[in-house]
Length: 439
Image 1 (cartoon, rainbow, N blue to C red):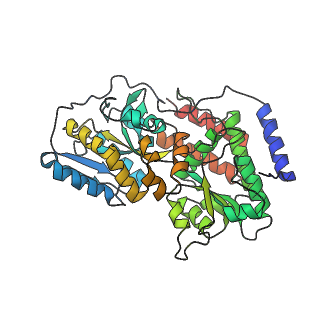
Image 2: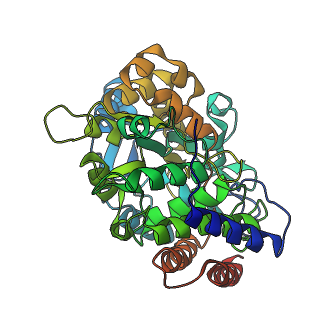
Image 3: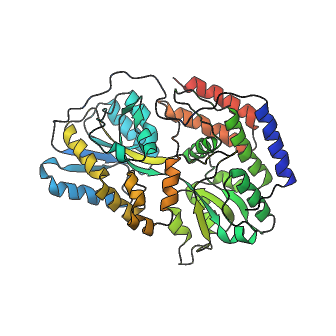
């Protein structure tokens, strides 16, 4: 396809190249859980214990998990599962789970765990190690299993995953002479700059740039898309690496040029979705749930039938990477009836259950086979792209002190994209902060 390079864009790219040439460090591989000190002997389970258990998870907004729990209870009257719905807020869910663990309460048995909580709970021995031969780990997408691993031990069973995708206006790209979606971030911004110069009230790109957890998701994936990592396999931060500086320079230049609107500094998932749906963005990065919303035929979307989607593009010839979302099932170290808990988790993650849930809710499953399922492929236009995105996905920093780490990342990233700080000095300051937070 044809590409564009404006004079202002060439200046930014030249400055980026100069910054990269100023220094270099060894490139790091993709991060995996393992940050922190090895906790030693993990909490063990007694899988011979059977009886009633509780399931503690965030609010079931779909209603479908509750129906699966009810189906289990009909078949297992002596091993009934009581579903305890926690807060809808992820932060509040974590507080509830942490407070339960610190009090060594047996109130929760099976825990619905955000993937970024695994290191903290494993390191503190609040959840038990799970046997590799009891669950279908070999049949799962490898990147999802990584999210449940801490120091080469498994503490969770992946149930749901997710990856962001690039949504784009097919009609605007065609009008601009681009015959396919961009294959790199650089190309995407160049196309966006060309289109926004001709289309009134249309901005180039939007994603989640407000100062909240979504910003950590953006920065982690963007740096990985440049071939870098925030934390390596040993838990060492690399926020000031050439790859990280290049990624953040690309992002900052898009804000400076106006390709990304200043209003995007307030965007979370829904704000970016609404801007795209209203026809005000050429490109948008977001989760797959928005596909049906932006294609509604009830008049709520101005871009119905005009939207394409692809996996995220990379930077500097690297493969694009989304930060993974998702949920793992873990077993509390302080509750009993671990045998029933393990069987109930196996029931939730088996192929029949995961397919049923995916067909009803569009939740991304963890079993590889379901991404080749014809029913799901026919049901969701994004299914194949989603699998590619999950395969290339990376985890957020898997550190025991995650709450402090994500806050530091958000503060530095926001200062950069809002123009309050320059890329290189701010990333060096972030590096120093992360070194202090790393065990």
